[in-house]
Amino acid sequence: MPEENSVRLHCPAKVNLLLAITGRRDDGYHELVSVVAPLAFGDTLHVTHCESPGADTLSCDVPGIPLDESNLVLAAASAFRQHHPVKGHFHFVLEKRIPHGAGLGGGSSNGAGAILALQELCGHPLNEATCYQLAAALGSDCPLFLKAMPLIMRGRGEQLEDLSPPALAALQGRRILLFKPPFAIGTAWAYGRMKAQGDAYVDADEVESRLAAWQQQPAWESFPLLNNMQSVAFEKYVALPVLLQQLREQFGLRCMMSGSGSACFADIEGLDSGRTAALVDTIRQAWGPEAFIEETQLAGA
Ligand code: C5P
Image 1 (tube, protein in one colour):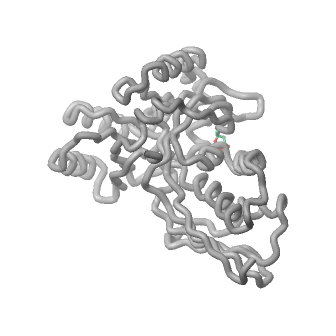
Image 2 (image 1 turned 30 degrees about the horizontal axis):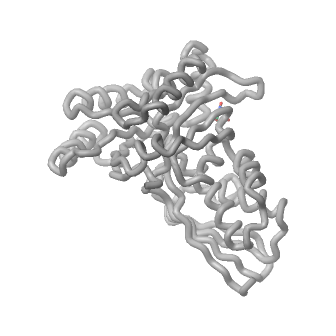
């Protein structure tokens, strides 16, 4: 290994095009069925291996991001070392663009990105199964980021299934607008509300048959957009359903909250630049100048 060795990695954000929380599990987690799509938009992670001894370090261009092992980047490095001891230390520099508490998978993507980067720097010492195991131990949403394409996620998030090529083709490259209000929603809070309410779950068989039917004849227009976490989030955060309804009425858009929120997304494929500007303006008027708004695409084309 040379004295210093570096890699630079895109850590994509994701949206859940379908998120069905179908029930509680004995381990305290929830069972889910989801179609999740990484985006062209995301963070950038730079990793340098230095031969000199020392602890792994992390710096970030955005203040307020934890820089200790509660950050999945350093947690991933530590888990990686347990499987493959490495001399020297790693320095991680994170260019953070994905907002926190958004349901866009920012922290999980960084953790998965760290595993991929260390694999690259160390000559791929871990097999694929071990990488997935490490990612699943870091967080339920980490394994999906080891693949750079839309896929089906089940279990608590660790069971991944590829979409058929026609289904992939129906999703990839689709132009979408992400928008998030200035407030965040905690994932654990949202799942806690699902548990407390008890009746917000959807039937797993019904979701599976809708998904199977879509995969038989996949087209974007017939994709079964669904997120049953919306019901618990919308009860407390009424700014979300109010704006989403307005966007449906004024712009005829298909739009929804992603994951446990608070970010939402709208399909803007085919929307011309004037209408897109009007859409952005409407969101800013509703949620203020602090709202996060980003135009991007479903990745993997
Ligand atoms: O796995 P992760 O640490 O990212 O999950 C964060 C929290 O979200 C968990 O503590 C749990 O409360 C909740 N969760 C869940 N079921 C899932 C995924 C997450 O209840 N499938």
